[in-house]
Length: 71
Image (cartoon, rainbow, N blue to C red):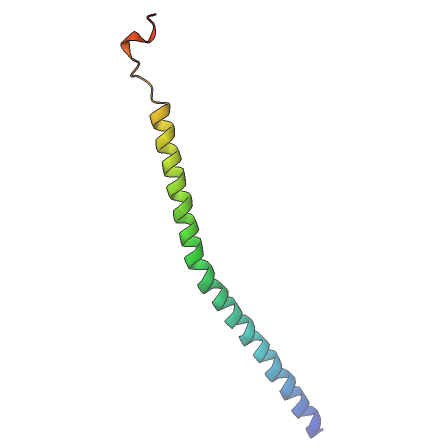
């Protein structure tokens, strides 16, 4: 009966170790993903801003040259 309780304790220790390993892996993944996501969002933000600026310049209305209708 004493051997059974030792085996049960070992299984509980291994279960706890697995949980700790998962937490460590998750922490490492998050610490890598956060800086990468910030860089990606910065790139996307800059690209969208440049696209918007270009579209605004090319599609600007209200300032038609005077000679646009003359031949």
